Length: 563
Image (cartoon, rainbow, N blue to C red; front, side, top):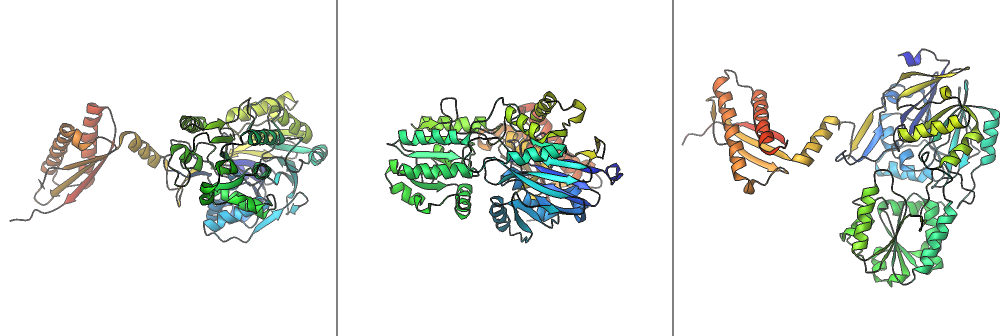
């Protein structure tokens, strides 16, 4: 493979995270050593029916697993750690280095899937990881989850910096980002920067988390008469910490709804971020508590159909029913693609009489954890890279981020907007694109990984749109007879009782096809018969109804019993 022609070059490529928001996985390779940065998942779009997660293609890592030194995690969000259980089922990873907050999240994921792994190591900003070709160090960043880090990989061909997800917040809730260390790294010289592009299309600076806290405090102090239902990202530990403190100041107990919310609170308590455990009550206790003395903290800020807030809005939640004049706060902004789902939930809440606060210019109840344009410029100035590769974003985001780099003086021929699998080869003197590695999407459906391909997804789409029609035929092959009129049953196509004439016509067509095949074929072939049934019935249904249900023929060879 051309990729391995020059072992003196350092190779950098993404297995996920380019052209998409999620599924982050970046690989740095030199000679006989590989370092992996992050192992995330992406949640499926609506058309991926039945799919739970989308993960990277691990083919390259499987073939080169003897070279893997470690997996390094930048922070504990799903799009950076969610793929770890699937990766460990496919590839031998000697050590996983993760920051303090991410370690219990990873450990819980592995326990849930019964995956034993003893190589999980906690790192901090002072940690150094050294191997034959690599020397790795870290710098702390500000993000919407504690213990987020950028990664510095010193290689024989220069220094590579991967920012992870970040923002610059001068008044953060939690520790400050280590801007001084970033500047020091940049001053020493950086060959290539890989930088978060999620908010590259947004101008200015992102809102400070402390401003969001002020807004939430104002709402709580104003809405003293009614129950408050608050939905936010379960992973935003600092936001959860402030909500707990605000509820305590306002004399409200907290009931948790949603598995991920319960897990995050549990881990936040273990990590010392939340200290007052007595403030939490059970959902049953919340039902008996005076409404203005309780806050329901739940998942579902993205309009997920099965999440707690959606079920509350639908009236289908087993424990909580929406009360007149409930105050609902959506402390989040819709992730791209979720806007319609969020709007549906908000409309249902209004319809039932709730008062809703969501993130608008008049109600700043959320801020992103990702850097906007001016913050991206600051990172570029601090790191001052010779070459620049935007990562983590849709292509329009990557392109905009590359343009920002060019605006700041990085030559256009030294910026790289790549696709997953495209390889950068770094030598002492330059960086150039060289070859590809496999980097397609892999679908996870329950416990099944990778065996759900595009054809299965296509069939699911057809069934969801046009349904399925089953033709059941009993034949006597020896005597070449159709023993009984074929039975037609459907699901999701038409109601049989209301379309008697259509079903009867399909029976007639299937009967004619089967009798013709039995009469004209000297050597009977089941596959030929099934193909003929599918072809003939499909053509008729398409012409008659304009629809294309999946046709499933079931042919049974049954000898007729003489009376």
